[in-house]
Image 1: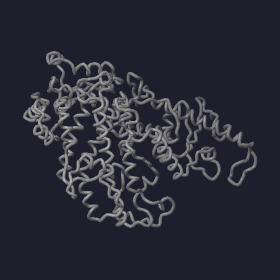
Image 2 (image 1 turned 60 degrees about the horizontal axis):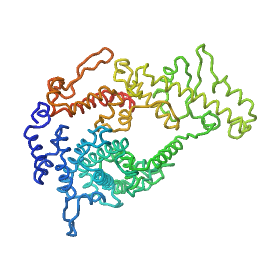
Image 3 (image 1 turned 90 degrees about the vertical axis):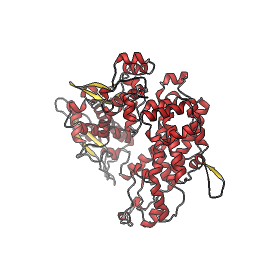
Image 4 (image 1 turned 60 degrees about the vertical axis):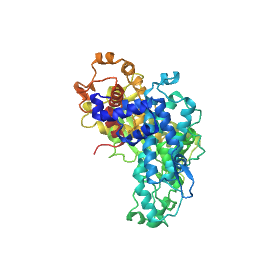
Amino acid sequence: MLSSLNASFESPGFSALCKHAVLFPTDENVWSLVAFEKQIRNSDTVMLLATSSACMNRLWQLLMGLQSRCASGRLANHIDLLKMGHPLDDASRDRLTQALSLFCGCLVACITSVDDADFVAGNPNIVFKTDKLTEIITVIRDVGLGLIDLAFPEDFFITAKAAEERNRDAAKWSTLYETVITTLQSLYAKDSRVHFLPNEFWSNHQRQVVVTRRSFLPPKRRGFGMEAQQRMFTPFSFVRFLHGRPRMDSESSDSDDEAGPSRELPATSADMRNLSIIRSIPFVVPFMQRVKIFQDLLAHDREANDIVDDFHSFAGLGPRRNGISIAVRRQHLYEDAFEALSLGNAPNLRLPVRVSMTNWVGLNEVGIDGGGIFRRVTSFLGPVNSLGVKTACRKTCSVCFVLIWKHYREFLTELIRTGFDPDRGFFKYTHDRLLYPNPSSMQLYPDSYSQHFFFLGRVVAKLIYEKQMAEIRFAEFFVSQLLGKRHTDIDLHHMKSYDPAIYKHLKNLRTLSADELAALELDFSVIVDDVGDVQTIDLVPGGRNIRVTVDNRLEYIRTYVNLFLYKRVSQSVDSGKCPEN
């Protein structure tokens, strides 16, 4: 591969090595590729390897044949050891990491490059038959679970020296962990659309996952000093970072006398394993079990924040008068809600929100305001009981609650409708009328767009927290970023919903001859128009000077899709999670 783009990513000599290995996939040539695994950056080079049946099969055979002699003197298979959560020596670990990383990269590139319809119909680029592919993905899935076991070993008491050694190994294991997890996420995304794996494949691993509130507790707990804590908590640092686990410093032992939930035991190794699974590869847990876990965690959080799902909590009666009261004008509902429910005015949006709305002439509408139906109904409920609530028949209270709840639901529905309305400028519709962040919102709201996206993110979180339904449908590529899958490439499949014409054009590029491609005079740049601000954006450094050829067209497609479906909306996604300082 001698194109200028290839030269910018890898040398012509290395490209020649790849081609030679494809033509002559001997053990020696394949291991030569493995040794230079980190140099393979160009997706066209990856596809060259991924579409070679002989090369991929030989690489898989070499992977499955990796062995070393253990302390007992017998040969142990490296893949089997990893699946069981057993560590490897440094040399074996490095060799396996390189080989498996190369194989996973090629496998994902091959599967994600094939259109869903072509995948179902059968595509020559898929070098493994379905049965063999299922066997391979089973091994990768079990290796991922084994790496999580390796991060959080069962041994309760270990020496400080052993804990130090494990932490030193973290960076090297994290490379393989990230590769395997990313691979599983990409394979699951494909399977969720075309269903090429057996039913219940992902959860068929004989592992029970249970996540409780204890899984999220920090290590500082009554009765556990620093030395004991460090013996219990020895996960890989990358996994601790993944979960936002606090460092165990001298401050961890300052709260031995805390009351309440602090008396609970800290998270065990099993808890941390389960939490890792839920946060990185949740699809290996059956869907209904995930729903149950999520509902339990929400219930624990509501309890911790003294929030009760009943009439008195919502209406603000009795001893629990915690809540947020706001007043909004129907004609300016979004603007008023944006101000009243901002982070400064409503830092804890978990609390019930009580809304008073005024109509276009300035009159209070029916609701829980001082002069509304709430006061008129409660005035007839009778004397006050010991809880500070007027006594009356349960039916009357229920009617009052329904009216208040409908008023609140109407407010939320209108807020969602106006906030996500493409006419407001924060979101746009795909061809299939799915919502995604408007890349031009920064030009429309240069001083406040990040605050608006953060506010809308809080509103969506509020709906989820209260288990409410909303008539909003997000584009899949946007949801994928919301869920934290920021390091993976966007599948060409998503471009079909974004813009069918562009999708068809990009798909056809893969089948054009060299002359047909040259006639298009494409380069690695695109022209975008953001509310009149027209500019040329390079897909790669110096892209406007790099022609698209048959050797680099897959790289062009990948970078084109990632620009429009990832890079141009990533800043809005970040703002939806955390406002700019």
